Image (cartoon, rainbow, N blue to C red; front, top):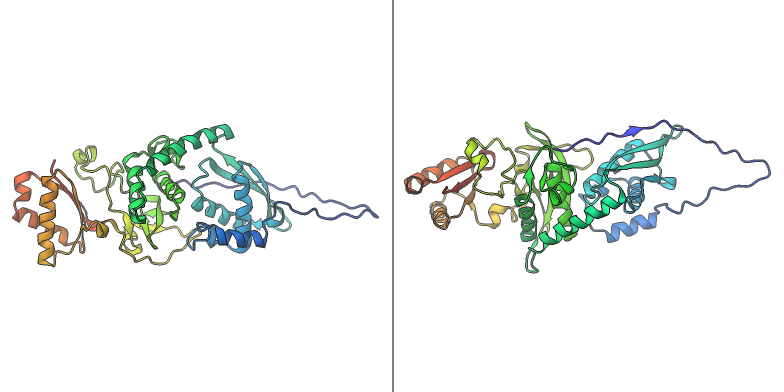
Length: 384
C-alpha cells in the first residue's frame, strides 16, 4: 500500500519590473542552471539515472534538467528551489516528482511539495518541499540507516553474482520486517531499517536502497494488486536481465488470502518465501497491474534468475525422472527438518504432486502439511 502525494497549487503574484529611461539592465546569469553539458555528463556517468527504465530516463530533456536542479537542492536539504532557466510546466513538474519518487529511496525525509507558477506562461517558477523531519533528525536517522545497511551487506561475499546478492538483501529485509498497515514511517525506508515494521512502499524502497548502494539497478514500481488496491514492488536487474521482485508478498507476515488455516497464519512454516522472486512480466501480471503514470515497461521474459530455476526447485511432472526427483528431494528435505518450496510448470501438477506424496506414504507416515499458491503453481511442504 502506498499513499498518493497531494500537490497544493498556490496563487501567484506576478511582479513586473519597470526599467527607467536611460538605465540599462540585463537578466543576471542563472548560476544554478542545469546546462546541456551537465545533462550529457550525467547520462554518461550515472548508470542508475541513465538506465532505460529509471524514472529519469522517461523524462524529456527539459524535465531532466529540472530533475537535476531539484535533486541538487534536495541533496543539501534545501526546501525552496527557484527553477530559473529550468522552468517547466505543471504537468512536467508532476512527471519529475514521480520520477524522483521512483529513483530516490534515499530521500526518506521528503514528503510532498507545493509550487508557484507564472499565470501568463503557465510555467512553474519555484518549488517548495515539505520534509518529514528537520535536518538534525534526518542526519540522526541516516546514521542508523547506514548501520542497518552495513549489517545487511556483511552477508555479501566477493564471489556472489547478482542473483545471490539480491537474494541476500531480499532475505534480510523480509526476515527482519513485519507487515503492519499501522506502522510509522511506512512510506519510506525508516519503517524497515529503524522500526522493522512496514507496508509495500517501505519494503520496496528498502530493497531498492540497499541494491543501489551495492551498484545493482532497481526501480520502485507502483500499480495495483488485483482485488486489493494500490501496491508497490521492484524491477531489478540481475546478471544482465530484468526481473520483478515483490518482497512484501514474500513475507509470510503479509495477510495473504492463501492462509486458509488461522494456525498456519499465526505460525507459518517459513519466515521467507520466494513466490515473487525473479518474475517475468507474464507471471507478475497474474495478480499485479501497472499504473503507467510515468514508466511503461516492455515484456521481460528472462527466467534464469528466478528463484525456483536457480535453486533447481522447478519441476515438470510430465517426466518420470522429474517425478522421481521431486519425491526424492522432498524426502531428503523433510528428513533433514527442512521446508520444501517447489514450483511446477503447470497448475495441475500441484495435485499430481500431492497424489505422488500420498502414494509414496510420505504424507501419511510423517504428517506432512502444505500450502499452495495456485496462481503461481507453488507448493510449500513441511513437517510440523
